[in-house]
Image (spheres, rainbow, N blue to C red):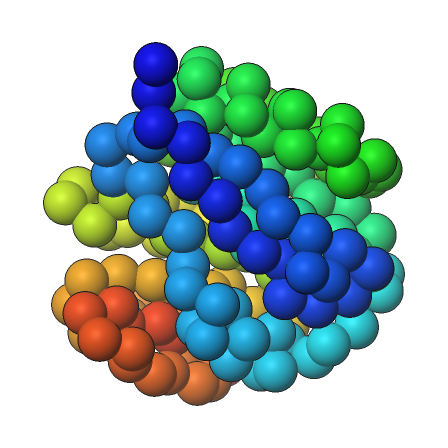
Length: 185
């Protein structure tokens, strides 16, 4: 039997509700205080925003966005067991406007670039820390971003964007570095 963990939604319609997720290598939900800071940066009300949670994991970021009124959230998670937990949590919460894709994040982003309707206002990019997925995923995001879109990056080391990425806000909590960036001038 796999160990089950829980994370609390900290704001919005589902405030204080808990969601469960299985013990899975590389899965570590964003801490409450980090999520609180992130949603202070993004604004407490995400009404009308289209969000992409590319490495969904526990789903904490995507469910938090839906709880705060996001128009839609697309979650992408490669692990079948973690994806099943996300599906159960969505049902328990009665989450509407959620699309769950049990798929490889990089393959999803590549395929979505060809879909003109797959454009997002907010992207959560929180891949496993012990991988190279962050560096691989960031360039794939550009065609998925609406003008003025913001991308949240969580990483083990300070994030130094290149190309035309611009840091809007950044912080650190223990070993976790978190950064809000935008693309363009």
